[in-house]
Image (cartoon, rainbow, N blue to C red; front, side, top):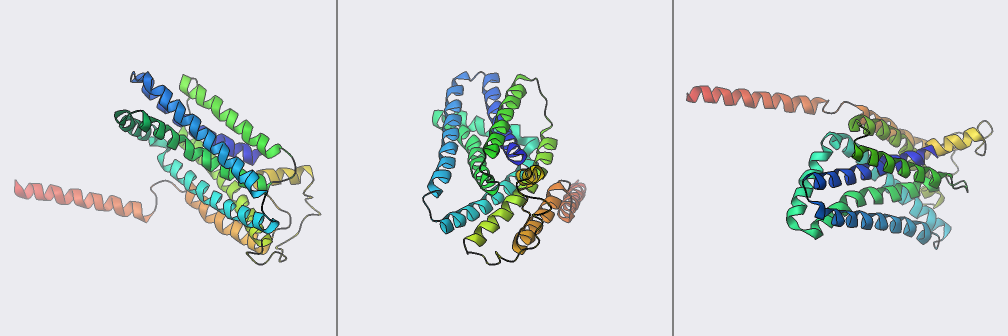
Amino acid sequence: MFGNYLIGLREGLEASLVVCILIAYVVKTGRRDALKPIWTGVGVAVGASLAFGAGLEFGSQELTFEAQELLGGTLSILAVVLVTWMVFWMRRTARHLRDELHGKLDAALRMGTGALVATAFLAVGREGLETALFVWASVRASSDGSYAPLTGVLLGLLTAVLLGWLFYRGAVRINLAKFFTWTGGMLVVVAAGVLAYGVHDLQEARFLDGLANKAFDISATIPPDSWYGTLLKGVFNFQPNPTVLQVTVWALYLVPTLALFLAPIGSGPSARVKKQKATDEKADAEASAGTTA
């Protein structure tokens, strides 16, 4: 449940902050006439996300077992790719999110109502579609017959809406860079579990081999139906008897991805090379100016 709460909180807060920034900007610039198109775009984005989620859930029920597993495994991997891209993108742009949105909104205001609707729809719709896909994959991975995963997502979204409203009212100051770094790191861990489960789905669909080749089996030590087994399953998508391929893919994704994500922004040889190049260019320009003088 915690993993799904985290998904709802992070994705919902991103969307809430986007809406708050857009609304605050048009209000402060005296363009209240733009509020209706913005809310229209937000509403369409929410509706599209719900329809997408419903399509995934009910559409997959008409398929054969192997087709369901193949679809589930493929979409789980796609969800992990999208979420991984999202957490890295947000980590880089969190500090400049407001300025970026203001620039897009200025352009939309000049273009008219349709552009405003499209701007709000794209800004919120991307988060909504990512959320629907990742939540669907995560719920499949933690399918235990209960409503706990969906409850966690709903609570996360409600918390995000509340924080967004408080942010708009000025009652809460959020260090977005730190928030998205911490939650992004935790989401990488959750995504690793979803990826491993997606691989298991592909093995059950007979798309990948090795279903009977177990890495270990500690079901007797950590029963899946125990409270701690359920907790580990809900938070990390933990499986007490994974296959060798699942464990391999989980480790190959988690270790390098988490290391890259937690590394300081701008670190590494490429950053130093760029800095040195800029310094050299500045020195050459100064030297050229001095020669000309």
